[in-house]
Image 1 (tube, rainbow, N blue to C red):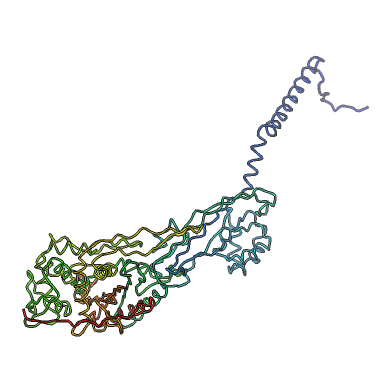
Image 2: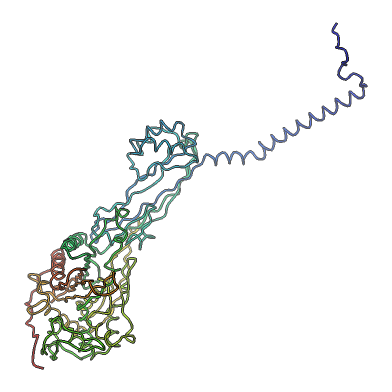
Length: 588
C-alpha cells in the first residue's frame, strides 16, 4: 500500500460529490465549446472561404507577361527596308525560386555573355524580379530553356535594326530602349508603327516554369503598320556619300542637301553631314541627332533673288530683256550695299542682273515691287512658314513683317540677307518655279500598310499657284543663264542636260560674338534639271566658318554630282534642245 507524504492530500479530497459533479460539468462545457469553435472554423474554411483561398492560391501561381507587338517596317519607295524589327527576348529571373544561384550563374554565363559574379549577385538579390540580359536571340533562349533552370523566364524584347546604317538615318530616326520612336519618321509615325501589345497569363509551378495542364491564356498583340517613304535608297546613298566628301574638304563643317521631284513635291533624298547611324544613336553626339535640312536655318544669300525677280515679273514690272543701268553700289538707309565687285554703271538686262547676281540691280527691282508686296510673294513661296514635312523639329525660318523693315532691312531681304530659311524651304521655292508656278508641299510618306496588307495612301499635299506659268517660264530662262556663259555657276553644268539654278553666298553668324565678324560663309546652290522639262530640284548648302569661297565654286559642284545621280537613277532622257543664247547686257 502506498503512503502519502506528510502534509499532502488527494486531489478532490474534501470536495463533496455535488462539487465534483459541477466541476466536471464545467470542464465538459469548455471542451465542447472548443470543439465547436474548431469545427466551425473548419466549416468556414472549407465550405465558405474555401473557394476564395483556392483562388488566392491559384492567383499566387499565375504570372502575366506582355506580348510585344512587332513594330512596323520603314521602307523606301521601292520596298527596300530602312528599319525593321526581329524577335528577341529579355531573360529575367525570380530569385525566390532560383535553387542554386551560383550553379545557375555558371550555366548561363556563356550563353548570356555575362560574368558569373554579376549573374550570381542578381540571382541572389531580394525581390522577385531581376533582368539578366536584354535582346537575346531566339536560338539562345531555346538553349537556356533546354537547361530546365528554376526561376529563369523570358519576356519579349524585340530588336530594331537599320540595315542601311547612316543612309537616310536622319529621316528614318530611331527608337529608344523602351521601343518608342524618338526621332524622324520613327517618332512622327509612332502610333502607326508601334502596334498594340498583348499579354499571356500562365500558371507556374514551384520552379517558376509553366504547369503543362495549368492555366494558359493569351491576348494576341496587334503588330504595327509599315510606312513607305518617298526616299530612293540608292539616290540617298549617293547624296550622303557626296555630302560626306564635301565635309572632308578642310573648310566645310556641315553640308546639307535635299532632292525633290518637281511634279509631286516628293522627297527623293534628304541628308546632312555629319549624319548618324540610328542603330548606334546612343553612342552619337546628341547635337548630331537632329535633321539640319529641316531644323537649321541660315541666310540664303543670292538664291533668294529668284523670288524678288519673280515678284517683279508677275507684277508686270520686269521682263527678261528689260535693261537697267546698274551702279556698283546703292544707299540703303545708314548703309551702302555693293555688288560683289564694285563697278561703274552697267546696262544689264534683268537676265543679266540674275546671271551676274547683282545686289544693286535686285534691290532696284525690289523697290519697284514694294516691301509689302515682296513679303506677300516670299510667304506665298513658303518663306517664313513650315513646309508641313512629316518630321519632328521643323523650323519655320525667320521672316519679319515688312511693316517692321528698316531701310537697310528692306534692301537686305530681296538679296537673301536679314531672312533665314531651311534647306527644304529653299528647295520648295525652286520646285514652284520649276513646276510652272505651282508650289506642292514637300512630302516624305506615300502610304501606311496594315499587318493584314491593306495599304492606305497618305493625303495629297496642298498645291498653290504662286506665280503664273509665263512668269515661271521667264524665271527658268533667267536661271538657266546663271549656269551658262557669263553666269556665276558654270560648275553646275551637267553634260547632256540643260540646268537652271542660282548661287548664294551669305555671311554666317559667328556664335562666339553673336555677330558676323569671323563667322565665315554659308554657300548655296539650288537648281533644277532638265531646264526644258524639269524633273528634279536639288538644294545644297555648305557651312564654311573659315572660308570665303562662293557658292558657284563649292556648292555648285556638289549640286551637279547629286543632280547627275538623280537623273541617271531615274533614267531621265537628256535635253532635246540646245541652251538658249542669253543677252546679259543691252541698251537702256
